Image (cartoon, rainbow, N blue to C red; front, side, top):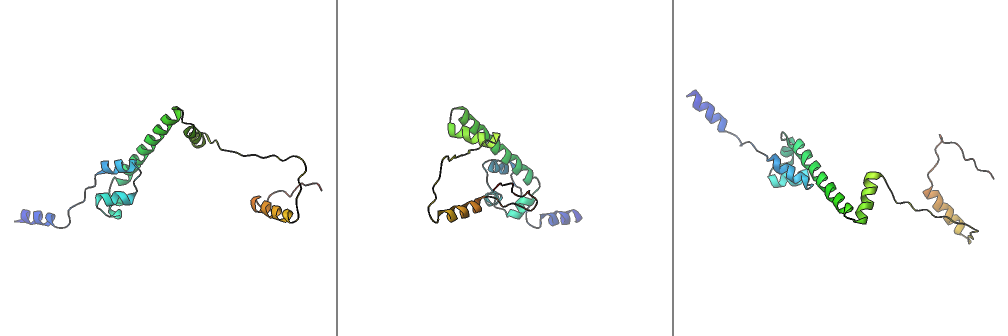
Amino acid sequence: MEAERKIKRLERGRPAFVIDLEMVERMAAIACTHIEIAQVMKVSLTLLTRYKGFQDAYQRGFCMGNQSLRRKQYEVAMGGNVPMLVWLGKQRLGQKDTLSAEISGDVAIHDGERERLLSKLVSIVPKRTDTEAPDQRVN
């Protein structure tokens, strides 16, 4: 009689959710968000993120996706794709596009242009803080 009672007590309540962590890894590998995974799994976001092993599975999948993407980008770049080579150079080697201009000779400034140019310069030149040394200009 006591054993039957225990069995009935165990059968009560909502059945436990089982989340397929391999599916979580596959979805994370294609950069699915937590919300998207929860919707596919038909569980709440809270239940999903609190599920034991979810965070580890998500991180593993996300990292695998990043590795696959990098591998493909590298293959494309090594195949001669110039924009991809430039992009990878910027990302991995810290390379950047720089533009420089040099003006030589006399520059004529018409009436009203001086103030407009000065206001533009003031807006793009970083402001000096009190800890910096004062200007060393010679007038």
